[in-house]
Length: 102
Image (cartoon, rainbow, N blue to C red):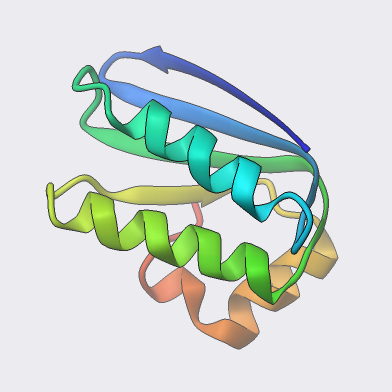
């Protein structure tokens, strides 16, 4: 698991590379906590184009970060999921709290 990020026009862009699962969840959680401690962004876009696999632990990581950012009124958007991850987001209802954008 690798996490890339950049901030542009008050938007934090985050890209997950690899697998977001039981083994990488701790690393992802800690990395996101550190990134979200900055105050130079007003929304987050998570790019999943390079995420190969995600399981229920990965869903938990995303929901946990969503809850923290929601308390600060910072929305999260999802873009570029592969077919497998798209199915997970639709079945779990994650798009209702983290909308998909183009």
